[in-house]
Structures are given as C-alpha cells and as structure tokens.
Image 1 (cartoon, rainbow, N blue to C red):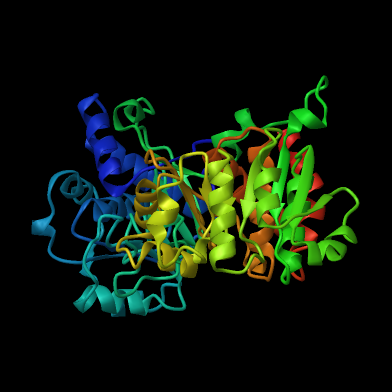
Image 2: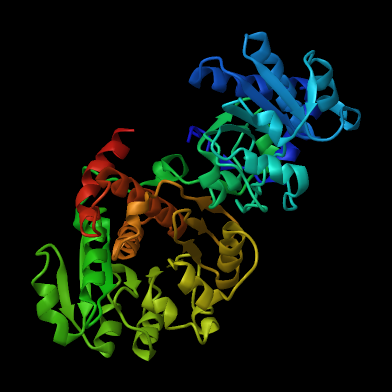
Length: 487
C-alpha cells in the first residue's frame, strides 16, 4: 500500500474540505480532476500493456475522472469503450467539462459493455456513497466479477469512512485514491476489496491540512519513531523500566509470552507476580525473568515500589473478583496499566467500576468479543466505536483485529494495517500486550506504546510468515527492531 511518507487519513468530509480549500486557494477543480484522471491512467500504463478497456463512469466527479482516464488511454492507442451511468445532460461542473473533452462514443453503462474487455476502470461511485447499490449499478458491479478492475478512489460500493460494503463492491486489483487515504482503504471489509492501493498527488497543497487538522493516521514508524525509547549509551537497566506481569495460576503460558515480549522490546527488568502454587512453573521458564510468588495482599505490597512502573493485568488471569482486585490495586498504586483479556471480562457486569479508575496512562487491548462485553454493541465503524470507547472510559483503547484501531480519549486514532492472517493464533494477543507493557515501562505514553506495539507485532509476524506460533514473535523482534533503528 503506497501511503508513505504521509500518515494522515482523511474522512470523506475532510477530503471534500481539502478539495474546497485547494480550489479556494487557486487550484481549479478542472485541474484537480485532470490530474486525478492522469494519475490513474499512469498507474494503469505502468502495470498493463495496451488492451481493450471498459471505463464505467458515474454521474458525479468520480465519473468525471473516468472521462479523463478514457481520453488519456485512447490517446495512447488503447481500445476504449466508455459507459455512462445516467445521461450526459445530467453531468455538472468539472465532470461536464471532462465529458466535453472526450471525443469518443458514450454508451449506456450496462453489463454488456464489459464483454471482451478484460480490464475495467470503475469510476462509478467514489468514497462518498452512502446507500446500497441497486439496479443497473448493482448489476455492473456483479458483472465485474472475474475481470481485472481498477477502482478510482474506492471500489464502487465501499463506504469511504467505515470500509463497509453497501450491497456489493468489486474486488479491485488496483485502487488509486488522491492526496490522502480514507478509513475505508484500511478498515475491513473495504481494504480487502481495494487490492493494491496507491495514493496519488493531484496538486492539493499539503498546507490545507493545517486547516483540517486530521485526527486519524495510518499507523507506522512515522507516527511514533521520534519518541521510540532506544537505549542510551549512558543508561542502565533501571533507566529502562521495571515491568510487572500478573500471572495466573492455571493458564501460565499467557503471562510468560507477555513477559518475554516485554523483555525483548527493551524493558530493563520484568517481574512475573504469580500465585505461590504456580511459582515452579514460572521459575522454570526464562532465566531473564524475575518471578515473585505473591498472594493478593502481597501483590499490592509489590506495587508499592515506585521502580515497578508499569503493570499488565489479564493474560491467563481468570475472571472474577480476584482479577478485579488486582486491577484496582494497580490503579490504586498509580501505575500505568495494560489491561487485557480476563481483566477486561472481569468487569463486564460493572464496567463503570473499571472506567472510573482509568486515565490516559492506561491501555485497554480488547478483541471484538471483549469489547462488546465491556462497551456494549455500539453503532458505527470500527474507528467510531474505538473512539467512543476511549472517550467513555478515559483510557487508550486498542481494538484488535486485522485492522486494529488504537484510539486515545482526546480523539486521536490510528489504524494499523500490517497484520498478516497468520497472527490469528493462540497467544498472539498476549505477546501484543507484553510489547505495549515493555514500551510503557520505558516511558512511552499509552497511545504511542499501543501504536508501536501493534506495528512491531505485525512486522514480526510478516517476517515469520506461515507456520508462526506465538512464542516465535518475541524471538523475531530483534531483527525487526534493527531494521526500524536503521530507518
């Protein structure tokens, strides 16, 4: 996905604002449209030799882009058939001007137009579509099945803000969007319909972002690398934080995976605080870990040491009153916390008992099931839901999945899109929680730590590929960190 070096993601409304600001600043809309069509045509010519192509144009500016694409490809010798959804007389503004510059025939956009054209340019509807496709538009999208599709802005039927599919959407081989990506390019299921996504410069001045002030970014090192806690030459382990993982008595693997990840990501010391009866299991693990057998009262006393500066609660902990007590003890001690798994489920019946103890130094890492149990079945896109949850609970929320969203209570949000499908394996979430813990112990704030942990997690998994299991992830981290540090 060609989205670097710019991390900003614009909503559909923000993109309309960017267009308007560019035009008000002296860039004619016709120039933006011509540049957009030329950018798509250039990407097509880079990838395919001249072949019969059907350009499907909708009634708005997306269709205007299509007329420009058709004109450029035909001028370069490509056999082009252009189909218009609706009448030429209904076109307005820059789209009408683009249509006037097209000298070839304009046919009705029907499925029959696609016969004998292995390549289709989908310029029917852009990211602003809000209602399900029906009629001829729906038939056209279904007729694209099995053809090579190039989508202009988004595949028609993909909602630009949510990534939802409005009835149907083609599976594009290539999507070319403009200036900055939209949430629908990164959120599922829309991301799965976009294919390769290219963000093209069409002449919108980057200064328009000063007015728009976008609050959503595509997660990656550009977002947080200048605050990454690399070891200092004059530092020592006590400068690098002392992380505490509360280990369970039965599901011991979860806490051990998290603790290993916290060590690998650079925490100076990591203590697993475990029930006394499980001490031998934890102590037989990594010699780099400190294992401290403690009962509930002993756990609170352990946290009284100010040097123990970040706590992970939940992996393998078991639900119920004991786990709730551990979370409340950590917050009573004023520690930044990563709250995961069973520690989230333990508050499902009384979420406000958790929320009233949280602040922006805390990171919650639910998957969709844990999220719905804690926050209910809230409406909206994944981005909307994570933002609303963070505002409600006052902490950073990392809503896991192939399209992980990290949201801060102040409205900032990041969408992480580098996780391969192999991460859907037992224990991977425990490693993610441990990575965030280790970074928070080293002084990263909860939002940056959540973003960095999610990205490192995805990069490690991509480096491993098929066959990975959770314990591979911490061991792959040194190579990922070396590449990150090298830039």
